[in-house]
Length: 116
Image (cartoon, rainbow, N blue to C red; front, side, top):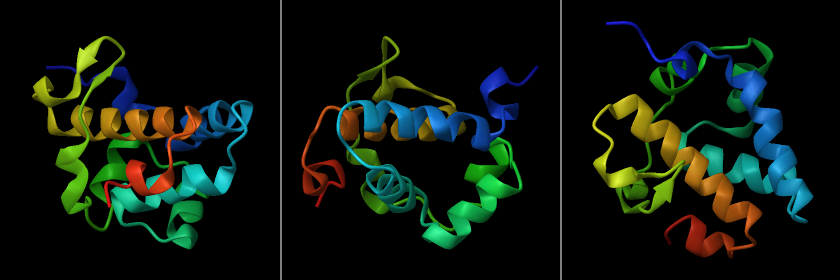
């Protein structure tokens, strides 16, 4: 079985799109970094290293220190697919991140985005 194309895409090539989406709606890069670090357990410095070395998305999530225990509370539809129904664990993590960035861009309060 072949891997989905997104799995082999460099995280560094997707990251600027996340930032641009948030900034176009008046949010900051720091907000995007905060949700990425919250979800993956990376520190800001470790996140920067992953971006610098151009790790692919599969490696980015595989090497993530720890998925946040509240990640399962991220629900809804992203790209026309309900997150809770995604069977592939890696694709579900990717969609979790997409959903968080969408919420940042929509101006949702950070405490709600981070499920605190």
